[in-house]
Length: 249
Image (cartoon, rainbow, N blue to C red; front, side, top):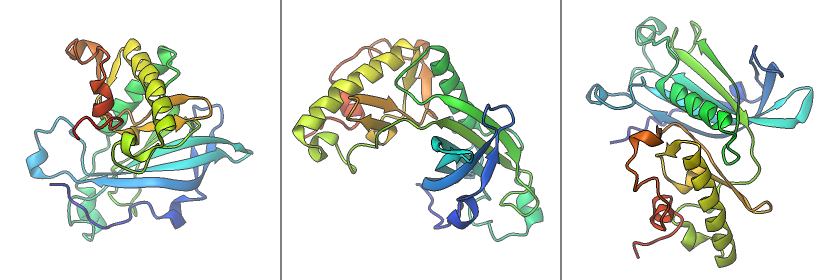
């Protein structure tokens, strides 16, 4: 069962307007301009054998820009270690005892995937610009815990639809166009050697003007060699997996 704390871990008054440094990036400072979303994932003792060994984590996605060229925008994904369930009111010394200083597991996964896709010249995914691993300070949520930043290309378009199968929420002509664009994007990612395993329309960006789909959020993926051949072969069923076509009616 998913736990929901009701906490806001990324207060916009603290984050929007902040500048993040990426020393190894051509543009070394990026200013946060707006928050797109945030979510939380609490680690419980029963999760010890999960495939994802991350500690409790909050993740936010922001839009940011080059302060010297505000029209140059990028997407910033931030992962913070957060206190275990219902320990966020404990003293800092207690929360510090939960700290993990390593790069978060999901950050490692996403960075690895994006690097592979860049090396393969994939045009259907955002490009990784830079990443930065830091530790939280004494007054932060988990002193000494991870604070990971991923800076990515901001691709044009929007997340299609508003929940549910896209077949049911998009006009027929646009849905037909999106289907064709998605098939091209999916096949390109497979050709690049990577299978996106978090299949959902929320992980798509649709640029109708350019008839282009981008596949985003590469936290969950597998190299092709770990997948059965039938999963890597295109079929109309793929549309259903990604909430594009409703075959369950």
